[in-house]
Amino acid sequence: MTGWLDDVRVIAITDRTMMGNSPAEFGDAIERAVQGCPPGSVLVQVREKDLDGGRLLELISIARRYSRVIVNDRVDVAIASEAIAVHLPEDGGLTVAEARAQFPGVIGVSRHAPDADTGADLVHLGPIWETPSKLGRPALGTAVLKAPHGSAKLVAVGGIDSPERAREAVAAGADAIAVIRAAWSGDSLVPFVTAVDAGRALRS
Image 1 (spheres, rainbow, N blue to C red):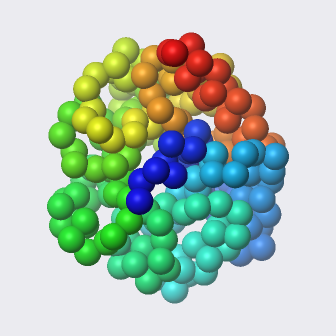
Image 2 (tube, helix red, strand yellow):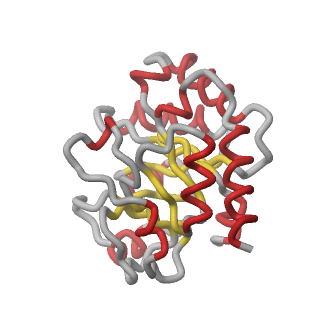
């Protein structure tokens, strides 16, 4: 069930303020981001906290035309959309065990400090570098990526605004990276996917 996670290099976290608010613009932004990337290398995380279930389902349906999708927060929407994964924020209402009892797919979580026993399949750890999306939260630095995190795939997040940082984060211990601004700059994510592969090669 989780084997496809090995293919994931980049998680592109949605933000309609950068992508465009209409469904067409949302889809166009994702299509540009994944253009030229190897199949399965980009996972789109639909994180649109202001939308109701109906709008979320519409955007998830659009995103699935181009990529596998992980749904933020809403286990009910993930189930309704038959999404492959759901992501739980650190301060969310559901535990991993509670989500797993309801949802048959991959469970992801966010952490702002190393946690060796989340019980999740995917752990976002950050911010690794300072980032506008986490104002006031100090950067953890790449050394934290060497900390034990159980059997989950480790995703570095926060301030990864260049392929060089992507390579550095993966070389330090991450399995993949997550980006917001870099995903919706209008360019393909190919350089970031390539950088993740380069970082993995430095570890081998």
